[in-house]
Length: 200
Image (cartoon, rainbow, N blue to C red; front, side, top):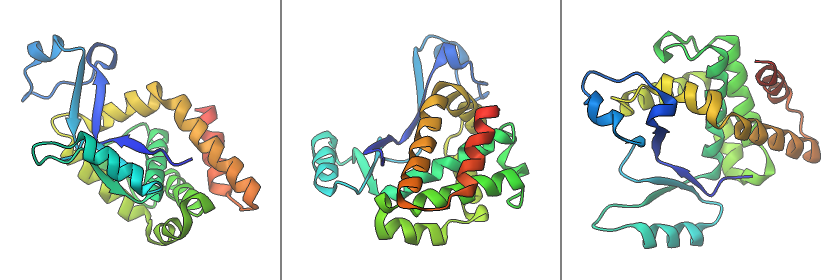
């Protein structure tokens, strides 16, 4: 279930995505590009720690000139993207306007915690689930909004998770639900989130 790598950049097809263009961007130059991207950090990839030797080898091969190719983090961190799907239920409104007590946001965060508790994520996932909160995830995504500038973080996610990779997102959630069933874990929030996303 854990994805071994995740891009550390927000990449989109310029013409297909048709995202809003910030005034600081050369719109004519951007229009000539097939793809555009914005790095959220110094590394191009985030690799989970489920295969430490593989992560180390990947980083060694692709790093150069003192620039790391990847950062390595706990596999359970890959589950935090589930909250982005709940953001879609809020019509991708500005994150500064999202109330952490909002029922849909809470549903996404609770679903994240249920997934982090799956055995595939081990003790690290259990610990992460205890630390994952509505306020904490919302603040993290607000920081990502700032890091993604001049790219419009909300518009990018509406295009990416709201359409382009939506099927893969739903497959990830369905896989998590099947794993929970196999482990005898009760995941009511995840089931409700899946139901709402399928009906959206």
